[in-house]
Length: 240
Ligand SMILES: *Cc1c(COP(=O)(O)O)cnc(C)c1O
Image (tube, rainbow, N blue to C red):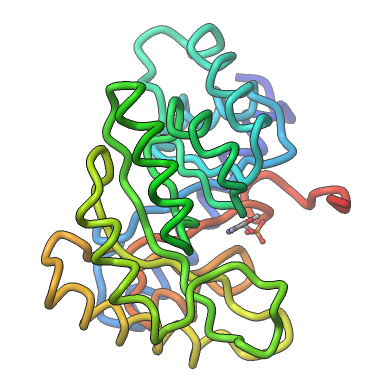
């Protein structure tokens, strides 16, 4: 393999991330094997997703439809022989009217924050003959009405709704740390909420927290899933 290819760059970034995760695990008395890294590939091409899969990445994340669906469609033809399709996690805000389409290609939707969206995903999954894993996105910053996520106090009720819907499997919780605050207290609260959720729904033990900037805090707080974009793929151009 010649030096300087995109594949080399991704391989190096994945190795650096694995080192960070290993160090954070050592500090927290945890095992790296207990963590799943979802590599968030938004804005980057399907060819990068294919390279990542070839480098052993099993889970990728996308935050927009139809970009996510387009990449899922392109991917099978781009994968090297023998490389397994990665699982697709939809991690972004989702309009109810796009839920049916996302339910056809996503394996996990991490951003379910309201019953109406859950019902649409359920209908979509049923229509596609698929089973969709669902995380409930929690928002701890109730001062900003623009943020996605269910209020902590409403989590149990939403969990009941999702658990009762056909085609959906309740798998746990997710949060995005506020930009302007230290992330650790928020991740600790997510972990606490997760414990009470698991008491009622034993299979819902996923805790998705931590992005490129706060991997260490998420590992320390007990996250099971990290969602890392920039640290692997590089800085993104501004989105909007
Ligand atoms: C983009 C994104 C990430 C990854 O963020 P980075 O800072 O690139 O690591 C994680 N979670 C969600 C919901 C995202 O939209």
